[in-house]
Image (cartoon, rainbow, N blue to C red; front, top):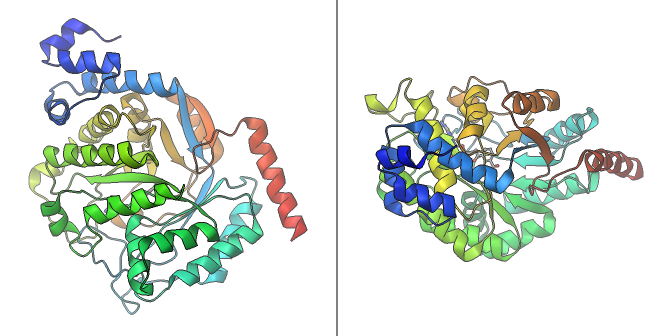
Length: 389
Ligand code: V47
């Protein structure tokens, strides 16, 4: 499938050799891949790596997102979801009962959740103990249901609010049932760009340090990169290299999610060349370069909510092996102009994967594959747990 002569003509023969023999790509290789005129050649290299790692599997998860609040102290310029204070139009905070009734409704439908994904703003006063209480209630209701929540940014925020260390916050959340952290808040690590798009958020070194702390406690985490705004290709490659170095040290990143910037309803003004139809190809190239650079992170997610289902399907041929999940409710992308639906059924996700030429594999929050029988057993256990309560 990969023609050496063609890669030679493109000036990619050394990258071609490294990819074929599973050797690490350099920072400069990353830049070369971004500059290559043939995006399909870059995609084919990423496909080679993706097939070596996962053959023809594409993973998905039966999950529900809960956005518990959009009130946030960070004031990130790019964010359409955030509200600065409770009195702002559209600001919301869910109560404990709101959260539990959403969980009950999702879990009593035939889909049977394998992941509860909490994501929201850094609320100025909601303390850690409020979330501990919610997680305990979730666990009481369904002890089998993995809770995935928070990014290093929220962990830093809880530490500031409560006057404790970030390690202490992580220990307490683990005890309350947190099994996995989400990958958000990484945005772009370059300090100069970060100062323009999210100056008040935890800085890059803090984001990486807290990820490492989570890994040291056995909490797996994901990682993201927000791209397509003010950053350069060098900033993207630098971001990927910093994640790769961190992963060499702490080893707990499970999945990388490249998040294409959605431009509606926010204050960030983009230069003209950053908008327009070419952005679709840029998304696919970024997925491919991520797969090739991040040789120590097992999974690459094409998040269908932000990419849209069509680009996400195509991204499966450019190195991605995961689509995330059923979602059910989503606000961050949709408030910024995402045109995808807010949720998908299992049948739709599996059809999307099969129609793209791949084999669907249902997984849980920790990326453990659920064989069809195990998925059924998980559903039965959840029903049984409810009967006991
Ligand atoms: O941190 C905010 C991004 C993230 C916009 O870990 C935007 O499995 C695009 O991290 N355009 C939150 N992106 C979502 C997130 C996530 C989603 C799904 C799965 C996982 C996972 C993580 O969304 C934020 C920020 O980077 N974001 N605004 C926007 N306008």
